[in-house]
Image (cartoon, rainbow, N blue to C red; front, side, top):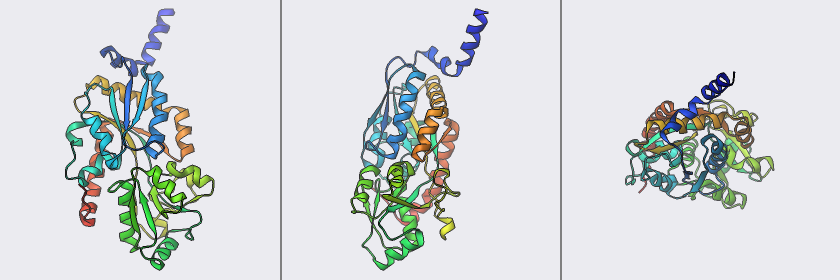
Length: 321
């Protein structure tokens, strides 16, 4: 009976234990987040890092390397040893859109990085300060046209998905609003609360506490269906902007050449962590949907996202150095 019990226990943890035979991990793992602390990326990476520590049997440390719309952090990962001890947090903008925007990236995501899996699913919200006299997109457009060039939009970085979402909105609405790029979404939110900018397009987890406190108002969801955590907010399509859809997801990558067994162990650890009830509740409290998709599906999502944004970026004429 004792032997049968031990065998059953071994089989139950086989997905995590199999790669352990390769000797991984034997020391702490570092997750590089390419944006400042307190932003939407940080709010996803840190709870997952804590949940993965007992799964991997080692400390999982988060290091913020903000700058260049996430490129600095990703460059750090790309040049790291391909051993699984340094991995990178990405969103769909950093991994799929940045290569379309930057002419001189110090790395090639397709050549230098490999997917581990995605951990969230959803889309972005249009958000304004609660004291701005605009309760929906139509009122926002009317206000911007009545005050051309006087409203400011804050993004988490020039060329990021939040910026591109704004450019789509500006193109489709004809509103004259000034773009102000920041080194991450968290400082942009602080300036919106301080009255220096009047509009953001970002993930709900960034501003949920301020929305709940009545200081920020979400006026549109840029998904194809309403967000389950904020179901009272209509989509842009419901408000007369059928083509204003800006998906947003987050995931993790490793340096290219990372051994298959190590990738499999990391992938399974993320899968288990995302399914954990604590993570599901934590993310939903933030307004984020915790959904795991593995390496193969993430690779497909990257290709799909790049193909979607390439003609839009070309049409908008956006190019960054």
